[in-house]
Structure formats: C-alpha cells, structure tokens
Image 1 (cartoon, rainbow, N blue to C red):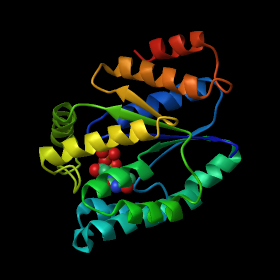
Image 2: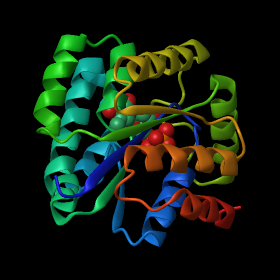
Image 3: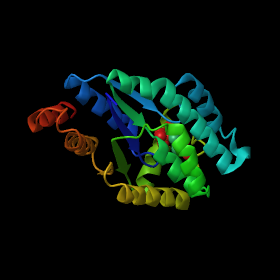
Length: 228
Ligand code: TYD
C-alpha cells in the first residue's frame, strides 16, 4: 500500500466530521495529499445503498440483511475509492469503516462469525493502519445530535441514531472492547474535551503512528495552534 489509511470510529455525536476536516488540513500543511470519505457511502454505488440504510428502507431485511448491505456498500467503496487512492499514495481518512459493522450490527445480534465473513469479503485486504476511536459519554453525544437535528435540515435522527440509551451505551462499550483487543491499531481519544484538545490528541496519535512520514513535534504544535 503506497498511501496511508486512517479510520475514525465512535458513537453518535462524537465529533468525527470536524476532527477529520482538521486532520486533513494538518496533513495537507505537511505536503500530503488527502482524501476524506465516509461509510456507508463514499462511492456512487455505495451512496445509493447509504440512502436505503439510513432511511430505514432496509429495516425489513433484519440486522443480518442490513449487515450484508453495509458490506456490499463497503466492497464498492474499497474497490472504487479507497484502494485507488492508496495506490496513488494518498492519505485516506474514512468516517467509519468495518468496526462500525462489528459494533452496530453486532450489538443488533448478528453472529460475529457471519460478520467476520462479510468483513473479509468486503475489505479485500484493505485494513486501516490507525483507527481513531473518539469516545464520548452517550449523554454528551446524543445531546450534540439533538442540537444538530434542530439546527440543520437532516430531518431528525436517522435509523441508527434514534435508538434507546441502553443501545448507545452497549455500542460504546463494544467500541472500547474492540480497541482493547486490537490495541496495535486503535488509539482511543477522549472526545468530551474542547474541539482544540481533541484535535491535539488526534495529531499526537497520528504523529506517533506515522513518525517517518510526518514532521517534528514543533510542526504539530503550530498546526494545533492554527486551529484554535
Ligand atoms: P452517519 O449520518 O454517517 O452518522 P455519523 O455521523 O454518526 O457517522 O450515519 C451512519 C449511521 O450508520 C450511523 O448511525 C452508524 C450506522 N452504521 C452501521 O450501523 N453500520 C456500519 O457498518 C456503518 C458504516 C454505519
């Protein structure tokens, strides 16, 4: 793989999109070429599947059918967007990836072995070198989502946001246990602090993961100051 692959994970309202934009700006300031993408979606075919999944249009298929659709979207996204970018030598920052299926569809009761099979087929060997798990207490995350739903035109919570508190809490714990099990690639970021604190922690984690590709600690400090 010529480029670098970083995924962002976390529950609802973790602040992933803002932090992804900030990391992109930092990497570009270091002379790197960056693409930002997301799941479900990230390629024309996968965006069509996204619309179906997030509207609840695929709910009748049940959690394992939905898992298959997430996997189908992922396979197309890897093939059309992620792999070509990595082959060009770009950095790929992806908002959610296979860990979201393990957590969301796993929590919904889909057999982990079945999810494993789908994952192996969908990712075709393309796995993140670094996964930033932005962890926030469920109440804080959902509070942010509630504000967002009132202030944008998203039309309220989507199929996966509008679940009971206990469901969100189980997802949070599943993400954290995945991070412990695959600690070699995960970095858990405390997402409850200010935007600037979170950015600083992310830049440090990225610097630690890619010491050769990125500049010195002083560049990093300047970049996070520039963000405030
Ligand atoms: P999105 O609006 O992108 O949410 P967020 O801003 O929280 O990332 O919607 C993605 C939703 O789909 C989110 O609730 C998580 C869910 N999801 C799954 O259930 N399984 C998956 O494999 C992925 C990628 C997402």
